[in-house]
Image 1 (tube, rainbow, N blue to C red):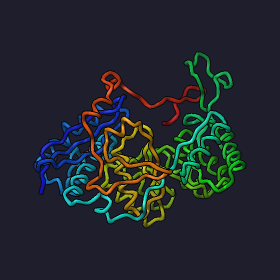
Image 2: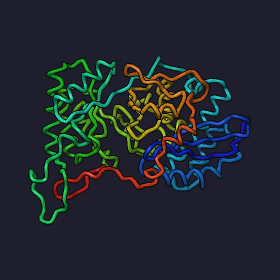
Image 3: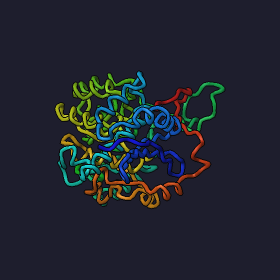
Image 4: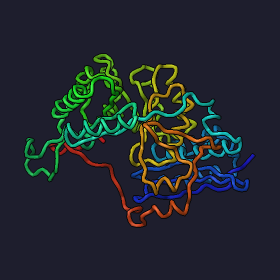
Length: 405
């Protein structure tokens, strides 16, 4: 059995926010890759891999995936944090990649074989006004997407007011825009009323609140959206306020998707087992890899909940491929968030998933089926931007209060 000889990181993409883990074995030419990308803490995750988990696992059997995961999970004593999960998730994906290569099978075959021919995805439609949004939705429907997410402008769009439209404190710091819960409650139902009047109830729509609302207003929005029969509403609450899902369930039947910021089993387990959500949206790397996320998918099956693994614009083709393997092999699969990459980015990852007609297609190569061309990956990296600090966008209410996230 192959043993782990080296674990190293490959940093790529123009902002430098993609971090690919390469686990090299003592067998000639046998290695695996995984995703440990973190848009805001890349250096911290890299240090956790190179200075903590890497030294722990070098010399161990690469095929002992479950034991390696359990050992690494408790190795720092404190656990279930986003940084350590991401580091562990990247290594875990790489070990599954190695296992598949040793077996001569794709990872989805090792997980029990495919439940479906391809992976349906939901697209991200947006517009500055209702006309632009409608045109974008129509474009994605024509491309074949079975589900389309609908947004007015940026996250929180529909809820932003110009500072002069609000009552602000004296000496308030300058703001280009202010988020207002009541404006959001007014405009988002109007958005779906327009789309349903123009497109009917055939198309399946989602919407991402991105946790901007106060909890009581989140309950109100879920009720207001019920007549428009959405596929789901995404992240209507921040993870600190998930207990409010009980009130949402009592008030309406609007389907709920949650979990983009989840890293701890105590966050998703009660929501699944109490049937308080309909889709769980953990990012595979943030959930600590394939080993843990396949257990999440199994838990979902027994409680009628579905998976919708999170992707987003900051994610990479390797994490996407790990999600695709889980999607193919999980009966509890619901929908997959799409992600678009530039041609030169895809060229650096031969064997990447293929997005066509609103569906993602894997290949039948052993392991994850994806590789990294290190020379091309190096060309993507901007040496200046790669090491500049980055922070999440900071929206505020009129009085200056920060909106989460």
